[in-house]
Length: 436
Ligand code: AMP
Ligand code: GLY
Image (tube, rainbow, N blue to C red; front, side):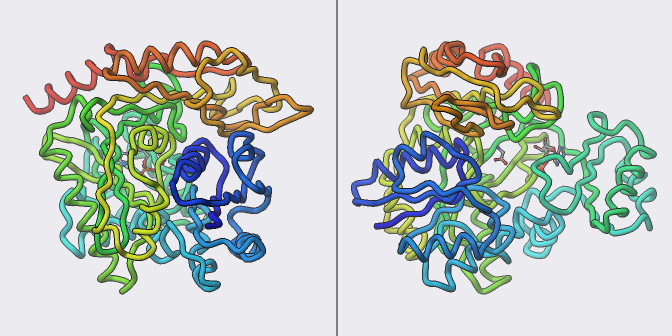
């Protein structure tokens, strides 16, 4: 079987490893935006090109007689890569362009939730000019969020009290969006603890993955600018320390309802990973956003736990036979931490050498934004390398990740607090205080 992975970050490195572990013999091809040495080492070909251009990717896929394509990042999905590949009979793990709107359009997702009365939708309104904006902000009071209605890598969202301090500032941000002919959503600010619950989805049936908590802020104690995610963890027994089983069940119910609504809305099955970004609040589980792909870094936690054959799962997705599979995950705790370039995310340095030779377990190292220059590893300007600790307790998993991280040399930084008792207790206390 010829398998294509589109994308070349740590998430795609994790996907690539799980493909090579499959009992189904396969050849791996990668269409990449940078030269990831981890993926390159296990691929027939890693070709660098415009991963978001459906035509370029389908030509590459056709040339190499690809049987199955797995789409890592959102930008190719937004541009209709799956529609292009399906046209030439290549089955895909990833939704078509219409269905990918669950990630690419904030207003689409909120409208879908409203239309199908899916639980967990905050109060919201969509705007394309300033009419009624001030009035709506007044209704929401101090707790509001302004979201650019499109892909911005998490950077299009401004939260009151964090990124914007007054209605006047909020309106200024709305004006910036309007000046670019953009639409925006203003919604109620939800207060609680965020988590990700991803499900494999064949359009009819969903298999849920364990919940994971990501850390969006660049610096320790959840301070600093938003990033793609600095690290993530899950506790033993497929849980998170601040969630109840009933919280996790609510998130699963919402993912199922979203997949069903998408099928009714478009008459097409959602095939791929449905990623619910949730927040546990005093009023129960609410939806922050949806993504149409694996989370990054969440994928590194999930693939560290997945015990079943990933190609079989992919075939279950593409053939709409997921209900026939018994997918299992280990009960271990995992902690994933990212090393990122100095200056990340606002002004990351680039091109500097990094040295990983002292790392003990290279199997738990995932390459992301790196390149090779004269046989040496260099930083390519975004999240650089991820390390995962896997153990019987969160404390041990954190200690493993942290000690390996300290063995990576170069002008990088990481968040030491991810997965530590101190930060986890803060989450537990926050949830307890909300729930009384
Ligand atoms: P998004 O791109 O929608 O995931 O938003 C990025 C980040 O903004 C989320 O991870 C949250 O931390 C925050 N956020 C988004 N929507 C809300 C909301 N309604 N209430 C509170 N925080 C939010
Ligand atoms: N970890 C957040 C994301 O993948 O969007």
